[in-house]
Length: 112
Image (cartoon, rainbow, N blue to C red; front, side, top):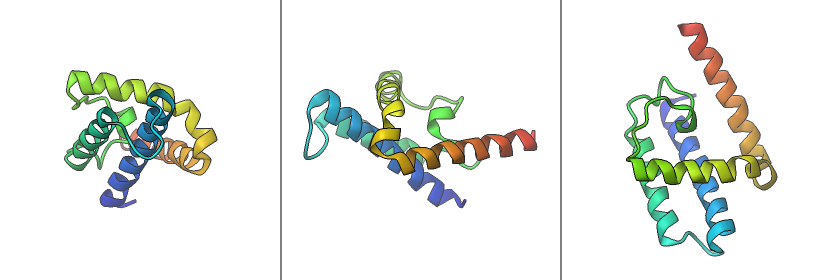
């Protein structure tokens, strides 16, 4: 998978997870609340500028934490809430994410 496509998939997954979190926790129906919109924008910026995108699986699996501490806690809260629920709300995307993560991990393990 090329790098730009990988970045876009990462951003799409994060956006879906933030939207699910916002809808269920903040009651947002037609879009994101200001706090979640700011988190999404920040997450996309981090993804766009990630120097490790080529060698890592996904941000959720990254060992280098480039998020500011307060944003890191917000994204973790979103991931903990939305991760298990993604299979019910976006099953194809969730399964694809799991499969690609496993492939990337195997590829990284084979290279070390």
